[in-house]
Image (tube, rainbow, N blue to C red; front, side):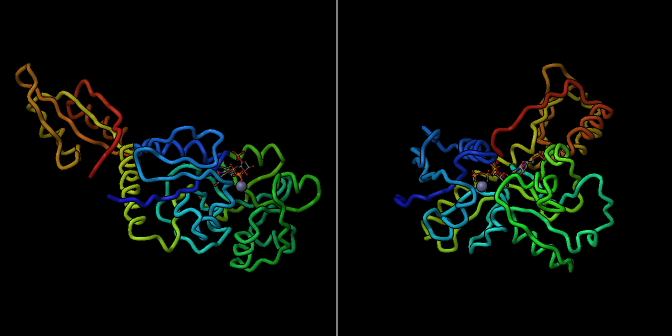
Length: 287
Ligand code: PRT
Ligand code: ZN
């Protein structure tokens, strides 16, 4: 019996909080009283959850206060702690971009030469400028970066963008993308064998949940004489399942489709003779 417990740090409140808690729940990990708590221990999985500010998570994981954590890649890379990314989680997607006033003529990176750029990501911005041989003044501010150009504090801003609405409202336009980011699972470098084992169990669950989300279970009725047109369109886990219907001459065909190819396949299936196509979500997918 494994008595070790894996400690995970997640954001206490903010944009990653809901999705992080939801992911753990979808992995079948019971978490009670998560609101307004500093930490909680799961009753059915060897996991203790710490709720922290996202900026502090890399340091806590490096120091071993937490074994693993969930943070944005933007935070992971800016903090540059000695920890590893173990898995991209597909939520909290955004980009770190440079924006300039809308009215400005932007003629590529050279337009940034000699400018003052406000940001909360001095390391990432500095590295980007260096890589592109641009000399500019990096002006570090901790919040509301998007207002800096408007009040004359800087000529440009480097900030996180998702919809672009904030930039737009502040009279800015996005001109360069420094980093495409999403939430990732990170781990310290020195986990014990027991903790690695728990991490692997958690990763297995995370991957099953994420694969399931990207897949749909599809059922359809097909006249037997058209099966040879329909079946090649279906991948299935190994191959599609074909069951006879009560009405002779017809079959029920079951398969699993990737969400990305879903709509094109459905059209093709209809023209190949499939009828009564039923699409159902999958909760978990174990390969
Ligand atoms: O309190 P704590 O320090 O934990 O939270 P925080 O305020 O530092 O972070 P929070 O909750 O705002 O964001 C946590 C993480 O979510 C970030 O580190 C990113 O990895 C991710 N994320 C995803 C975002 C956004 N999308 C995002 N749009 N983080 C911030 N924004 C902000 C951005 O800074 C700008 O102010 O939203 C505004 C832009 O949004 P749009 O939609 O108008 O473009
Ligand atoms: Zn923060």
